[in-house]
Amino acid sequence: MINASFLSKVGKSSVRSADDIRVKLVAIAKDEGAYFTQWVHHHLFFGFDDIEIFINRTTDNSSEVLDDISRSYPSVTWDSADWVDMCPEEAKKQIQFVVYNKVWHEAKKENKFTHIIFLDIDEYWIPRHFNISIKQFLADFSDDDVISFEWLNDMGTLPKLSHVPRTISGNLSPLVKTIYPLHAPVKELRHHVPLFSKKVAHLLANKVDFRPRPSLIQAVSPELQSLKDAFIYHRAHRSAEEYVSLLLRGRPGDAFPYKTNRYGLPVKDDMHREIELPLDAFLKYEQSYVNFERKTNYFNHKLSAESFVEERYKASLANLAKHSLANYPLMMQMFRGVKLPEVTKTFKDVRKNLISFRPDDFRFIRDLAIDAASQNIDEAIELMEQARELNPTGSIILKKLDEFRALKGQ
Image 1 (cartoon, rainbow, N blue to C red):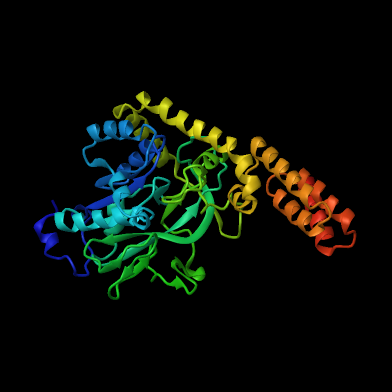
Image 2 (image 1 turned 30 degrees about the horizontal axis):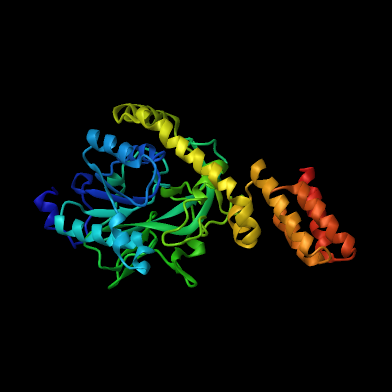
């Protein structure tokens, strides 16, 4: 329990000792057995006091993995959230908010924690210098401060099933994840930034006031974006193979088998950042993970957990041709930038099939060539040349053809 002197200060603005801070981390997950051990270790390593995980609609060995973690680390607990499926259809689609509000309500009643944060299993809280805990970080803020951490989105270029790398690279995202004092006046929990019932001290990790974008209130204003001393490493893609596998998880309440709120593998943009974690701190972290894996008996579960990811990857590929032909724009959105041979061959065949119905439509062929460029530059050139034969003077066609040839040359 929190000491009495701290509880008497709740609601007052004052900097306090890290020893007075108690942080609860909550997640809801589906078929994440291959990732729990890394994610739980990471957040225990950085001082999160309590981790509560809810699994839903899960068919892998998540429960076995979590049982062994909980046995060795009682501060890590898990439960099923399948009871949400007894709710009406619209409520089922909001499973995260249903569960998160339940936990928020219970945490306030328990009065054991000062702060709470909701993260997904692909989200890792990272102190940039890798040498302070979440509680040490929060001790430099006031009791009432609500703090939002910006995302650094991974690029999907790491080896399959790899751990957090020493060199972290990605594109900064304006989206954030937020940690709250449990007495914060939250009116409505949301994915990134909540709705408050009254004005609060809402800060970024560098203590600058959070200001939203006018068109996207859960995203930080562009001029405030930067890689700060603490951020969320968002491992949404991991490797190309894992990304393709994860796409087949679908979305809650959606009958379509693929995860339609994904937009392909990213490319470096103006917000790309890369940091190298301090060697001594990283080696200590890696050794700690080895010990954690041994203590939680993950070797008993690893083969099954990782095989599930691989089998889902194969199923994702097996369903690709059928859904890509019937839902080409949507599937292209999700698989843009994926250059795995099985994927590029399937999409090449699909585009060839689509063109057979509109062989004289140079605009249609041109647009398919632009799609192909993110997956297979040779196919993109071939299709754009086909479009040029139908429209030899088309300015977009000629420009893109030059671009594609330059890319191939690079």
